[in-house]
Image (cartoon, rainbow, N blue to C red; front, side, top):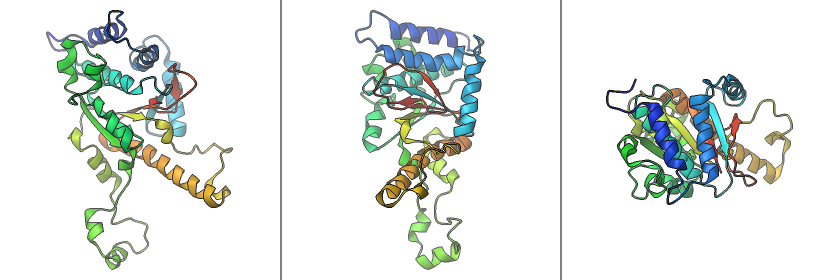
Length: 295
């Protein structure tokens, strides 16, 4: 329940929707950006209330088949259609509703996962404290909601951060010491545990509490091979350079996917929104089993 004197979540959502679609805006938002944000908001706030429970059931079923333990929703958007702006809209919507006491459906903690260093640097505009932040540059939040937006904790990382590197102690240990600690090479005594990795990546979130929403940019790079995908060739069926490329590609894809799942299990994140890239259309649509913002 919202505190006395604080606008209710529905009022915040209405204010944001009217602000985004106002014909008086100096810089109007692209129709695809509005559709993408509205699709995500519909799934959280309206689908069940309108009797469209089949949507959530289909998402849960697809997640169980492809991403056990993690609900992922994909918004496919064309290259150049403004995925970063959509991520900013979703962060503003979640944070403002969380500040208004919107309940467990909302949070003010976000883990933004980039496919590489270059994109990671560009995504710094999602930090409310960044001088060139997208909320001010694209006028995503009415002035009276800016104090609520500043409560957001946004962590931008590279999917490579989900790897399990050698620990500080392991780097200083001799080969003989490592063999004594891990004679079979199976327990990985000198590498980070999944829990240590999550603690490193999510350090800025502090103690467990509110859930963390993962926004995964260009999430088509992040996947685990479906067990029922019998048509796709396995690494064992390939040879030479094709096999090396397939192994490296699958390892990178698993790193991002497994990292999101481990973060979900250890830090309290329950949803992942990915933005995969799509060149043929700018229209956003929910994609079961995917992640939420791709482009």
